[in-house]
Image (cartoon, rainbow, N blue to C red; front, side, top):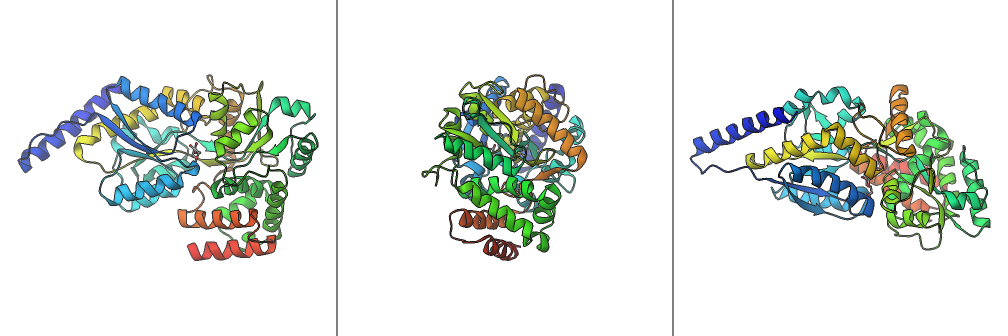
Length: 424
Ligand code: BGC
């Protein structure tokens, strides 16, 4: 692999040299620096990113950090848009789903197909993800992990104190939250930001209607599913969860909600497995200090969002660093080390689960099983089911409903359909 990279980089250098010779300009040396835009600013996220920085440092690449705080990446995507529009793209950017396809279609991504082909990435990455890393057969992004949103994270000591057991259905979940309420603990740690509420709603929809219903509504945008009684029931179920938050949930960052579960102030958080990165950073152990279950009623399905690094079309002197980043990211040992810390599971299907805790092992097994069964589906909230305009419309309607601006589930389904139609 290393040998191939050396060859590849030599090839790139030769191309640059040829360019310089024909244009008569001075030979520009490779810039030994990776400039990376991301929104990994929480404790767990920063620790995971460090694994990558260290790997690249070993190969002599400096790290130029462009952090843009804000879970879910909304603010980061605004910064990225401005950088690309100014003709100043980063070497790579953390990116989700359809955002990458938009940049690819606009011709803003570079082409790392040669490395991808040589290393056979297409054999180890699920086809569902390759839809987002490649356009017209050209690789323009690399998947660093597979996260999934349909998880619940539970403080084990609190669970024991209230005599709770694993909830298997939505109604069980509500009964468990009632137990916590009766015991005087905050039942549900929530960050009341649109992306967080929408992320939770993905799970509520899959739990309420089943995964086939989720696909019909969010992947196919089937009108009858979007406005069905099942979708109304999903909104009603979401409204039930509102009764279990603490009064200060509005605007709270996701990692502060995770901290409430970590320190026993709250019983449970519904959140993607980046929450586990926070438990890791706090030195909490899966199965001992905390429990991870699939969102009740969604076992067997994985509602995924993958962090990709979009490789921008950078100048020739920055390409060697970009290839080094892509190569490091796709190495099986990195995919294990990084995801152990991040809370996610490897994007490569050929990475052993040996170093993962029980939640990670379950995550890896779940992805394989769901992928084989056709139940590996993109998250609507996280831009893996629909393009950003539609995902944004979804965030708006869900948050308006959750905060009482949309009063009933009847109105919510109407507004959802109208917002989605307007965004198409
Ligand atoms: C990303 C995760 C990140 C989370 C919170 C998600 O959109 O996929 O990597 O940890 O946002 O910032």
